Length: 172
Image 1: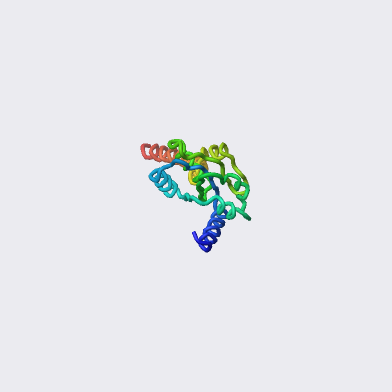
Image 2: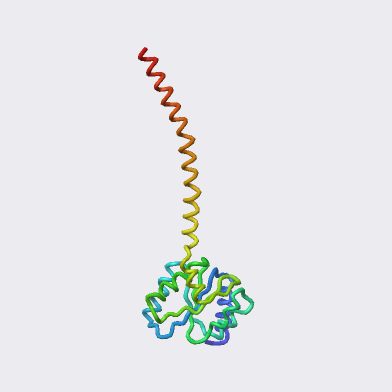
């Protein structure tokens, strides 16, 4: 890489660290190209991104961001997984690491919070933002449906009473 390319890469990575909901750092030593391509495609399908960066450049890019506390994780062959949704990147990395022993989660960051490997794994067990929205919407709609049923029930009972009186009057 030339100096201008490095400067551009650091600037781009700095913007990524500032805009991401979560960042996960992991070792990938021994992973094959096919495994890495599979990992990247899974992350891309979920809405995240995986980058392999030189540790020195990543540490420079971290300066001045909320995730600056994770700079000590950049030793050895590391990759960076990030997404705007705070749950997506940890979930995909941890799921992929379960089936592939070459990917080892080191830690990460979510906003100003620095996460160790266990925190990233526990974050991966949480439902995604879309799942939470769906659950919340379901909880909101259920009482509304019940209220509509309760309100409609007396009206339908009243209609049955009027119908019964009308039939009684017709019969008489």
